[in-house]
Length: 430
View 1 (tube, one colour):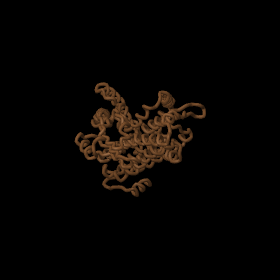
View 2 (cartoon, rainbow, N blue to C red; view 1 turned 180 degrees about the vertical axis):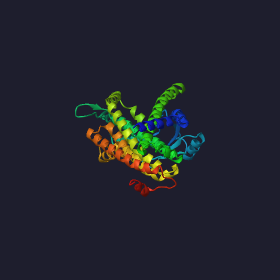
View 3 (cartoon, helix red, strand yellow; view 1 turned 90 degrees about the vertical axis):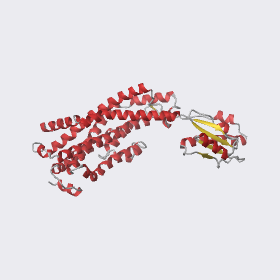
């Protein structure tokens, strides 16, 4: 164990003292914050850009229903012909031209929108909603119905959500849980890919320089492999912590200096949230406060460490089996595939039905459970499901480390030959 401690210390110091590591540790937050600020600034410019839409309403029924907004200004071109309107819109570089032909039967099937670029779905849907609502009102009046009576009879229904014990929940609580779970799963995947590759490159570098031949004369191969995994993971955690602290400080400082509002970007979800009442927002805040942050953090650390050890062992075995990074490509797909599968299952199955069959099965499979289970836990998972998932993950880690150590023990001394899966299987028998 003393040798393992020395190897961990050596790998950790070798990483943090590396010039590239130090540069990227302090440069990456600056790049990331710069990108965020740039996106926020460009979004503010896009939000300030006003769209002018020409409306040529030959029917005369709809022009009074198009009201100017902060984003769109409508200009009446009904007194011009279609060709004249098109020429004017092109000359003044309007966003587009809405042409409504004259129709006695109120058939708007020939309504057209002319634009240089295809407008967004939401923009067209808004125009269609305005026209459909006007036609509906005209049809009701034609049938002798009083619109004011109908409007006064309209009712709105807001369903309150609560469990059988009487605790209320917000309709948006699912999005909060989705955010926590999705962020945890995606963070784990990126950590595995970045620092797993770092372990693999370290093994390849020592093997290429023949340093490993000297090291294993006094250290067991399995201790050398575990030391690399643990030492690299500690360096990665330190680097990630620095990223979080520096990124938060720089983001706050730049926001204060430049005055760019990072939360001013208008998205459909934010527009929808602006229509939510204060009671709903208060209930949402209460739901966030009720989240078991302590248990979420604990499970995150368990699956974070477990998933990293599982995949890093495979990365170390691959690094020992090849002579250069080019030869690793044939082995990388089996590693990336379950990671990507876990992300896709998480975002498409867990969010839709966190307790469904697909979500449950993939949260038990060790190669995908660190990601999928992290996405499920905020929605509430039985303790026995988590226990089974962790038990299977630990068994898989022990088995993977044993297999990886077998390959590592043979591979670090093999040169000049590109191994295949059949060759790796033979090494397990040595």
